[in-house]
Amino acid sequence: MRIFVIGNGAREHALLNAFSTDPQVTELHVAPGNVGMESIATLHQVVADDPEAVVSLSDALVPDLVVIGPEVPLVAGVADAVRAAGYPVFGPNADAAQIEGSKAFAKDVMQAAGVKTAHAEAIQPDATGEQIDAAIDNFGPNWVVKDDGLAAGKGVVVTQDRAEARAHAVDVLSAGNPVLLESFLDGPEVSLFCLVDGETVVPLVPAQDHKRVGEGDTGPNTGGMGAYAPLDWLPENAVQRIVDEVCIPVASEMSKRGAPFQGLLYAGLAWGSDGPSVIEFNCRFGDPETQAVLALLESSLAEALLAAATGKLAEHPELQWKDGYALTVVLASLGYPAATRTGDVITGAEPGREVDGVLHAGTKRNDNGEIISAGGRVLNVIGVGSTLEEARNSAYDTLKSISLDGSHFRGDIALPAVEGRISIPE
Ligand code: AMP
Ligand code: GLY
Image 1 (cartoon, rainbow, N blue to C red):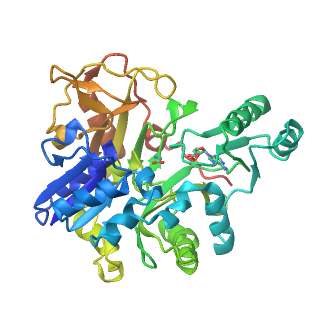
Image 2 (cartoon, rainbow, N blue to C red):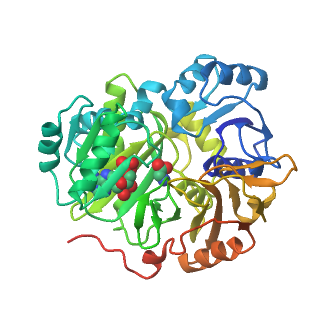
């Protein structure tokens, strides 16, 4: 099988890594990719969110499967174009990608499908100061203020400080975007990824992301600083409940609207006293959770994604998982997520280290051929073990072999779970 992956982060590196050990996969291509992928895939310098450019590269490669990693090309219609050109695509068309691209659209689908989620109110960019104040006063004492557009997880402020909530709303509105205010959902967070081919929904193992930049969940939200899987603290039937109460109703509602979802439906949930409530949907694999989840997958990822892309998930054999736990720790640049310094030399991350669990996100080569940081989230380091503690030790040990000036990471990924500190509200 010849597979063409679109994207350039650690999520795409994890996808390629899983494909690279699959005996059915003969060739791997990626656009644009990153230097870490050089030893397992052929890199192509194509603008990943330009549908025409991606179709012409597909025509040259004639792939058996195209896998689109990030949300931006999906929302831009790259899947529509590649599908129309006749190639099987894992990733939704633009209309279905609105489940992530527009929070208002997602709320509307959830309401129609009877799915539990936070109560929300929109503020439009032309709102007056009084209207903004009135809307803010409808919420609290925990305010959740969101940018209603693609913001890579960074457009959300959750705060008990009314002034901070108002200031974020004004910032988003003055950039011309609507704001969504939401009621606060209590309970630990779960990311559940489901393969969907329109109607059939196949869950992967549940994971938990660590969104805040600082240890102990402090500081601003990021794209994700680390993740682990599976989640022992969830009730036994939790995955089935999420599938039945959230993912199947949403997939059915989208089909009913003529926007069937084909690809990866990511349900971001809070597990509260009466079970799962949706925080958000994404239309693609989560980053960094995917890096942990795929480290546990035993079945062929290529076959499973092809089954989803060709509407054959119902016939696909049940996915098999390794026993044990996996964890990923993100190594971030100085200053991330605010002002990020790039261009620092990295040692210990030569291509080929995916076998040790070293995946690249924001990296490139400088003129001397050295690998340097080129983004906020620079590397991901994966650990696997028979216990979560072992997985943690393994990842943090590997991190010691890497150096990047000024970089930072969270030392407490999965620690609350290891220490039994995660509790579901009564
Ligand atoms: P989002 O981009 O919508 O996933 O939000 C980013 C993060 O903000 C989530 O992972 C949660 O940690 C937090 N968050 C968003 N919405 C809510 C909510 N309604 N209640 C509690 N926390 C939330
Ligand atoms: N880990 C959060 C996301 O992928 O949006």
